[in-house]
Structures are given as C-alpha cells and as structure tokens.
Length: 497
Image (cartoon, rainbow, N blue to C red; front, side):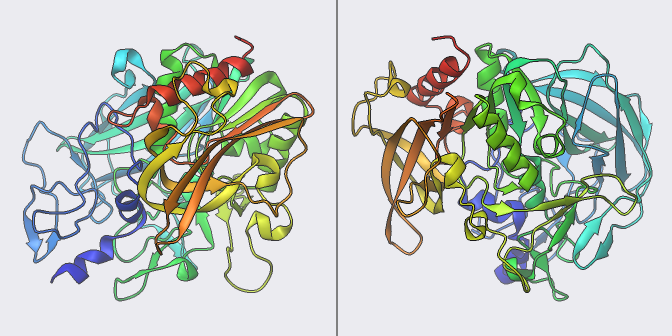
C-alpha cells in the first residue's frame, strides 16, 4: 500500500496543519514539532510517532506498552485513551464530568494544567486525580454523519474549588502503559475584569473529525466513504456533536492561537476573565462588565445570539478585539442533545441542500458590518505584513515605519476591506496594513488590518491574519512590533494610556 492509501489520513487536523504553519501551539508536554512526513516523503498520521513499527505495509501504528517513560500520543484508530467533558466552561464551585474510554481497560490518571505564562513554561499543573479504573466505552453512535459519544459512562467528576483561577485549562489523560490524550476546558466566573477572553470552541468543534479512523469520523469539512476515501465539504456532516473527544491528541485545531495570546497577556498582567463562545451564545456572560472582549483565535462559526451579543457590547461602549482572520464567516445553530442538554449539537448546512446559504454575507449581514473588514481567502505561503498609516497610535513606539515589512505576518488566511460592502457606523476608521500576496491560483490579493471607533466610543480591531496571536508568544514567530502594537491597543481599551 503506497502513498495513495496513506493519504486517506490527510484530513482535519493533518490537512490544515500542513497548510497552516500556525496550527498548533507549543505546550509544556508538546514541545517538539509534529511530524507530517516520513523520511521517504510520505504523509503519515499527524498523531503517530515516526519511530514506530509497521503493523501493515504503509500504515504506521504506535507500539503498545513497552514501559517507556516517554508518553505516546493516543490515536483515533486504537483509542488507547480518549475523553470529553460534559460542558466546555464551568464556574468555581461547580462540577465537571469526564467521559473517558480506555483501550485496553487499565488504570489511568488525569493531570490538570492551567494555561498561562508561568515563567515561560506555558502552563502550570494545578491538581492530579487519584488512580482511576479505565473502561472500554461503547462505540460512537452515528446518524447522518453525526458522531456522538453521549452514551459513554461517567469516568470521573472534578469539583472545581472556589479558589481556582478563571482560565483555560487542559486535562492530560495518561494510561498506565504510557498513552496520552488531552481534554480542554474553561473555568469562568462573573467577576468584572478589564478584558473578557472568549475561547472559540464552536469553531474548534466544527473542525473536529473524531474519530479520525478512516471510517466513521465526520466534521463540517470532511467525512469518509465506505472505501476509506476522504470526502470534502459537500459530503461532510451537517450536524456535529460536542459529546465526543477531539481527534488525535485531543487538542482542537488552532487551539495554539488562543494559548499564544493567553501566555503573553498573563505575562504582562492584563486583567482577564474567561468564557467560551457558547457562554456568549447563551447569555451566561454580560459584556457590559468588561472594557473589551478579546477573540484570540480562529473564530469562524457564529450563532445569531453570539453576533447580537457582540453588537450590543460594541454599541454599549465595550471594545472588540479580533486577533485572527476568517471571523464570523458561517452562521450556525446550537441545539440540545437527544437527552435535552442545551447547546450540545452544532448545525451548519453551508451550501448543502435547498434553502439559503449559511454565509453571513449572503444573508444580508456581511461580517464587515461588525469587523470593519472580512474574509478574503487562504494564504498558501506566509508573506510580510506591510505597515500602513504608521503615524496611528497603534504603531506608536513599535519602531514600524510606513511601508515596513513584518516578515511572515500574513499567513493561514487573510481578510481585507471590501469597498462595495457597507461599513459599520463609525466616528474614526483606519486601515493599518495593506499587504500584497499571491493566492493558490497565482492571482495577486492583499490583506488588510482594520480599526474603527464606534459612536459609543468602543474600539473594534481586526488583525486580518492568522499570524497575529502567534507573533505574541510563539517561539520562532514572535515579533516585538506586533507585541507593542497589541499592548498599545489593550492599554487604550483598559484606559492605561
């Protein structure tokens, strides 16, 4: 079996990680780069250790328990250990339910980390579970490409102490024989703060192809046919469930974008509260309690309540900061699970079947009317961001001059201003970058970075590129000019200037 067989794995996280150099951020337990090609140039599953035996020709398979002290990443084929939580965000004093499958059944432990700067470590261990008895859970249920594990038994209940800090957390699951997987979650509370960080878990789930096994998994982008061939968007799922693990290592695609911002912001002492996009959707957070809302990573999928909450925040004087691109592109719906738990199913028809398109801009509500710019397309190779309006206060003390190039800062995907699309109501507006690049067809395009002040006084900033958050605190990608410009923006929002 040659390369064509192996390419069936070029899905979800693999396909996007290959094309997006800013796909996965460094974490204390994931310091090394992922390997996407073996030494013959063949593609291998992104979660497989390249130093493995081949159980069948051309298909790498992780070795089972050798007693090695180095953990190995669980995969979706053998599902050595995989898990998910009952809710994405939880408040101190509440409980979080973990549903975990272990194959073969054996003991396992859970280490809980909080993401932050922590003297450069990137996270700190908060607590460790007792040794737990792992069980083999039932196979995932599938219906019309919707994959759900809502029937998995409860494995562990974590009570969140009142003294835990709000923040982004990762549960690291490790079996007795050394396989490892991850489960992200958020601890939120309702205390007022300067900035509310909104983690894009709705978009994270849209890209989730669990189980990435060549047979069963489906996301809003991909699914497999009966021959194990990877299908595209037109054959992907329409509805996906939050009641399942994330594919591969258990960390969402693009999760590193959010973690990059968190490490940088906590290093410099910004007053942050945390929530996720379903909190914004359900009204569990009040934007008026904050000077600004920060959307730190790829945040492509928005419900109507999410957009209305952001618009009300802006119109009430709360600033909005969008540090990625391709934001608010698809309109989606959240609905209860079969057992009635709210917001556990995510539906987006895209262009499938009859009815109107799910694109915001094709429903008469272009994203530019909130962001000031909107999505243009993919950026095949990183290009420099070209500074524009260098006299603006955002570029103050950065050392950036008019026309200066910030290498590699236009990457992944890009936004720009569309002249024929209406702008939001504003008192001042500037485009702070104008960056030419070639798209995949060789056509000349350009990226733009935008800021405007709404009549309420709120600032709305949109970076227009995937590479902004990685430039804050990603080893090998940091740029001091972007760091200073982001500080200028947040300091003004937080009234520090």
